Length: 238
Image (cartoon, rainbow, N blue to C red):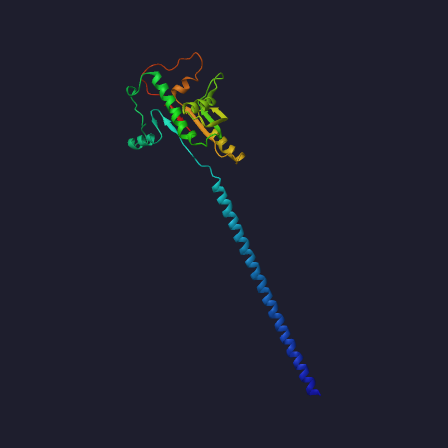
């Protein structure tokens, strides 16, 4: 009887030890499973955040501004010919343009023709790349003017007409007569930030002795027929 009780107690004791051991092992296994699950969750969140960041960066790249066309003219040279002269001169401290007045035409009408040609070329290479029959918001920059002058805005339509861009619909978005273009460039970028669905815009500028001559104070001396080195070369960009 006593032996049977001892065996029974022994069995219950062994069972209790096994139960405690199994419970401890189960708790340890459950803890490891929870820790592993948390680690997987952290890794998953990290992966999702990384993918979202990549998508945002891709979206930013997709919405980056693209230069569809560029027109640049200075005096008698246009587009890549300007860079060609810079390379040929190979001197950062010397102008690519002649310093002798004898190298320039004496006729004022010749300089006015150069201005007209430069306006046409700049618009052809810039506005000419825009989408046909689509309104193009246009920003214009020109030298300081008098109160009675239309100023920079006039260059928008005169340039379009000079370049014979009959299917290009330019809209006067903003214009300023100034010697510094920084503010207008900032307005252009702000315009795209405020109107992200607008597909394109145009910014044009003009300057030069002939341009400034037309904007001078009434009654003051203007340009004359004479061989001189231009103070400001006729330059138009778009």
